[in-house]
Length: 370
Image (cartoon, rainbow, N blue to C red; front, top):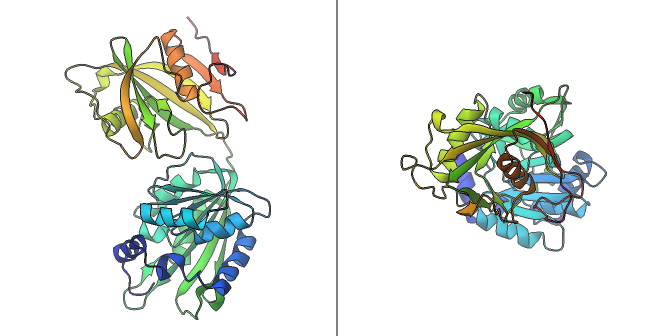
């Protein structure tokens, strides 16, 4: 790693320089050394592992061979394609996406695995908080990092990483790895280590808050088809997103409208239509705020501003909604059409993410006073 700056290293990896992204794992002895370490760091039972910044899939392959259900993510399509080829014959999935905001569902994994990645990213503490939300309660972080170089060192010291992780964890453990030459295929003299952390238990119930825009054009509603996100791809959904730190729900829906469909609404143009607590078949509970707004000459015609996450947008009759929708979104729109204001949509294990005309109706309307 010595001699690479941040941008240089990432560009070299994306261009396919084998020695760096594979970390020497074409050597069988190095592969076996890493396999032995993974058996120590990962649970003994099969679990859901997210390998972020998976590169060519070397660690993902080792984890899959040990019986884990692995999802790899890399921002480079070229690297992701090489990882898919390496993982042929396993149940692993490889997605293309941004490391700082991975295209996977929150609360969907037992272990988060990343190697030589965090040091490359800006806003590392905020990134760690986002990564922690990808884990189920009781999940674990396994972060392989280091600090390399003499005259102009790059990376993260173990002490720096420990200070960032400790607020999120109930237990942290650092193991120095530089002395184990078998991991690197040669002796090394810089700092290399793994930090393992068990997430702190949620002492109080906490939920993600999301916002949904029901943009109307007369008797029609705007829907977007998800793509490349790793969750509910191919299904229609209202423009939506998470409330970010420091935002209120109205500010969040205005931001999402501008980011996703290029529609700039004012606070006075959006109205609360429905509040619905919902849960996916395998995820955690969320609270969704549905806002309605009318398309006007002043708002402008919607456009697909996020083609990496959405394959198309279109107008659909509100009284004849399409069937290929995300189930909880369709339930929310139907509740809105019926004039309801509060509801719960609670998937059970085994339910599908997509709306099923003959499937169980999980919508429960909550009566409001007055």
